[in-house]
Amino acid sequence: MLVLKDVCKTFNRGSANEKVALQGVNLNVQDGDFITVIGGNGAGKSTMLNMISGAFPLDSGLIKIGGENVTNQPEHIRAKRIGRVFQDPMKGTAGDMWIEENLAIAMRRGKKRGLKWGVTKEERELYKKLLAPFDLGLEDRLQTKVSLLSGGQRQALTLLMATIQKPDLLLLDEHTAALDPKTAAKVLAMTDELIKENKLTAIMVTHNMKDAIKYGNRLIMMMNGKIIYDVSGEEKSNLKVSDLLKKFEISTGEEFANDRMMLV
Amino acid sequence: MELLASIMKNLPDAISLGLVWGIMAIGVYITFKVLDIADMTVDGTFALGGCMVAATVAAGWNPVLSSLLAILCGMVAGFVTGILHTKLKIPAILAGILTMLSLYSVNLMILGGKSNIGMSQFGEQSVETIPDKIAALFGISAKVTNVSIGLILAIVIIMGLYWFFGTEQGCLIRATGINEAMVKAQGGNTDSMKIVGLIIANGFVALSGALVAQIQRYGDVGMGTGTIVIGLASIIIGEVIFGTKGSFKIRIASVFFGSIIYRVIIAVVLLLGFNPNNLKLLTAVLVIAALSVPVVREHISEKKRINANMKKYEEVDTNVGA
View 1: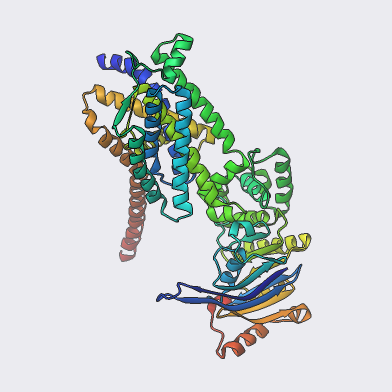
View 2: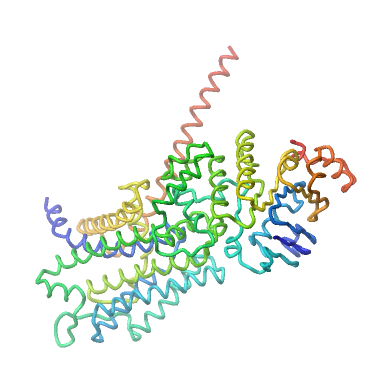
């Protein structure tokens, strides 16, 4: 489904701020995989997702989606098969537009956009039906500006927008990190449900080890721009947070001291 | 009382000029408000429209054809700025300034090296403009004609833009001005959206220039100076009166109203004996004042809030001391 071969990326090459983000990442994602990605700050988790989505060009390596080489494909072309939810709830929606207008734009991902009316009546009914299970009251507020919604509501909307046209690949970049714990749990549960229901292939970056273990069928740990641990199936479901911490200590040879990852 | 009478006498002119210049302000609205780009091209495009019409009409062209050509030229100018900005990554303001500067030479070329060309109404060299043709067709006065042309075009443009920005393409252009990351993630080409927006906007500006030239009966290479500021002034005056919360149709209409009121203000200050040479300064001051109102208001309310809070703590402090 998704293949990453020896993907490398260095930011600000040749300057004092040079930052090696990815050094030879290899990953082979099967159809239907739900992969959780953990790792400390600057491990390259977000950069990896940005390389896959095409937000930045890579320095070297190869990326294939569904057998097609997309290494040089611009972001908006790749978006036809990729659904994305960002960490920042503001980033996934157009605040000054209505809920239904945002959904209508997402509804036409990968389709030709012409001079037909932007939101049709039948669509509205569909949106109401799809928003209702979120239990946020959004189904009655289709003509409300998105900027009036809370972060959790916006993130739920972004999640629906990323999956309303079934994507080949769903990329979730710490999409619950900016939410309060209760909302985060709710959005995460909805994410899991959507992925299972639509049998989506997904990659989810998270800082929460418990979540990384609880969700998905495969877990990878990244450090210094490399994948240092890749586990799936039964071995993954039997994982404990202490196992992950131990793994981390072995790879670094030092105590695990990232405060954000300790919050498990 | 005398002043009021002269204002009333000048009102039809202010309305027709306001409506025709309002078409230009609509162009500025599309780039500045919808796309969030300050497009300086318009100073050049406005003159481009005027010069194109003056040169071709004076050469005996049908004025309708001339105006259509002017619109097309304006769209090309918008396209050039769009390419400079999106493909060559030149900052939007600079891209617009570069196109505007080039247009100055282009406009001189169009005028055959002269700085202006007239479209005479009388004598051997007399030519017909669109208002002339319409006035003759319906047997109405020039004043009535100009107001009707402005009014009809304004209504057509308001309806047309309401339709366009409600379509799939139009929605994507609006989203591009609000959140580019979202549009890209949803498979939209933000570069194309900006280019399309700039093309449409500059088409409107050129049409406005073409009509203004026909009404004043000459095209001048310098007629575009400060156009963008006049456009901004019209938008801001409209916003002050009609607010920013209304529907898209109302907001577009308020631009035309803003443009008319701007013309009325200009007419009034001229009647009061204001030196016309200082008009541009007045326009700039008007825009600065309007833009600074929200900033100053915010600053004052912030100070008030902090001071009120401070007082509360001071009181607590004294209580403890006592």
